Image (cartoon, rainbow, N blue to C red; front, side):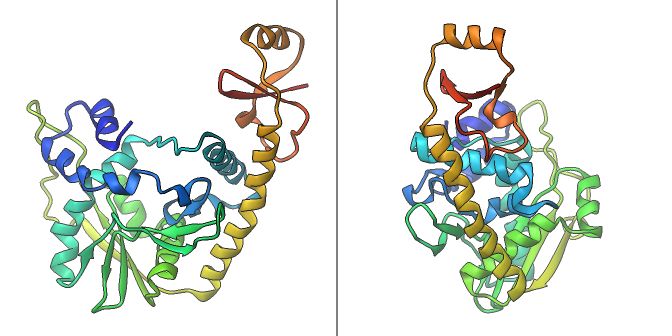
Length: 283
């Protein structure tokens, strides 16, 4: 399902201007085969929760990427918040970024590969770059005042990691996260209802310098992530496939869980089955 179709399905009253804007992003979402099973800057925060690569978040991400290799495509699933961000990104560029940085270029339909090793690639797709300033900008568009001010007061660590990875790709020494509060509401005719607050009051820039230690840690964690993905890939591809009737009997006699619901996904080999494109564990 395309981004446009997902937007219309999840936001039936989405204003037409937003749909037009999002059409510019179709090339970004269509999968480059080199990206399957691999890591983009927008995903790297999943490796930076408190427990790092040992966290359930990282394990679930490895499962997601193993499935991409097995299925041969990316299952693009998004929340309304993510779709709102895609929809509003151009507004942030037009209303905020270009006014402060007139040489800035919106370029979020072009990825920059940091590594192109087969099945171990990683890349960044910066929203905006300004070659005159040597600046890489990531635009974030919260849609509630609460989320906006929370990030102004303490920027999301995942946003910082994403921007650092973008700077690895652009080789810029300066980065920024542009926060732009935009409404998700529409009127009865499908026209966007914007906050009655001046754009300069509901926008904020968080700046950071390229952090060599952080950037090395990003690369280290990505390289540590791929073996996790490969363990899960091997376990899933060796799992026997059973019928619905066999799964029915198994659920009666054994303790059965969906594979992805386990806390640790790296030590389940030998107790995995596949049924109707879903993986299960049993004991």
